[in-house]
Amino acid sequence: MRKVAIIGIGALKARPKSPELSYKEMTYQAAKLAYQDAGIDPQELQSFVTLAEDIHEGTSIFDEYTPDQLGSAQKPMHTITHDGLVGLADAAMQIASGLFDLVVVEAHSKASNIKNKADIEAYALDPNWVRPLGIPAHALAALEAACYIKESGVTEEALAEVVSKNKGNAKSNHLAAYPKSVTLKDFRGSTSRCSPLRDIETAHHADGACVIVLAGEERAKANGAIPVWIQGFGWATETSAIDSKTWDKAVYATAAAKKAFRMAGIADPQKEISLLEIDDTYAFKELQHLEAIWIFERQSAWKKTLEGATAIKGKIPVNASGGCLGMGEMLEAKGLYQVHELVTQLRGKAGKRQVENAKRGVALAWRGVPTSSGACLVLGRQPQ
Image (cartoon, rainbow, N blue to C red):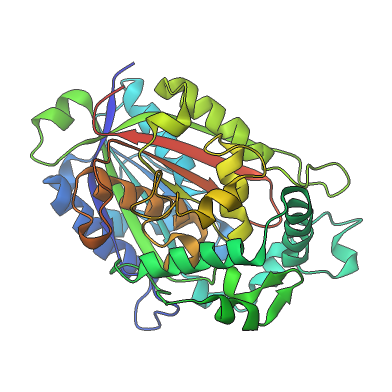
């Protein structure tokens, strides 16, 4: 298979609300940034992937609403109802198989337009046994958090450190929507979202748009942009049925990472990965995901976090961008913002939050409550 690289990235600053912009205008601005970064003319682009959920957008057959702002009119285009990392894997396979040389992936969030996201999340609950109970999807996350905390012995101090670290990192990221200094007192004083989850340890939705340009090896090396290579990817889904799912472990993350690491030739994640962008929709999820993909041993992620191992200058930096807690939770665009950060880091252009000697990065995205789906992507400065 041909090697595949990311040669262009473009993203808008995430914001809690963006009433003056439509999602089309946001996507156009992100695409313009990505095409400039890649040094290409939109006319050269051959295929397009957009990530969108009709029920989030309020329209059906969403493919029909994306071509104009991307420059993809009368060109191949399809929509995937999943996280942005799955869209990148799709685009990479189009190039690796020899179908195309230049493919664009787009995802956006106009979460501020959704009147009541809890009603939408309820559609993913079992219609016979769970939805009639009237519980919010956050309640399922709270049950998972309670199981994980009990099994791992996670302390309030560790969860507060995750929030403090990520929101603090976001202060150096001009794209982040929720930068903030957080103390243990702030954490303990936060209102309850759904016990044991507090509001401060739950990512809040944000609006944004991100566009990524991928190219085959020959085109990537001939291009003026700095290529970052896709070394491996994988995605997986565990059952979301509450009577049979695994509550204390992120099984989907383990399965997705296993595929991605095998493709990338990673035998020892602790030694071979420079930095990670890990889904932290809830603070406990960062710890759970780190253990699921073998960065830390079971029940040890919270201790390593308190020791500073996941700080920007720590042994293995996690969420230098600010993660979902600092950036904002952006629906299908979440994974693309993770990739935007990794590409920026691997190019050595992250400024104050730059991770020293970053050579290989990993993104891990979770589809969110009430699902048990996730995707993993490995990026490197060299082709695998």
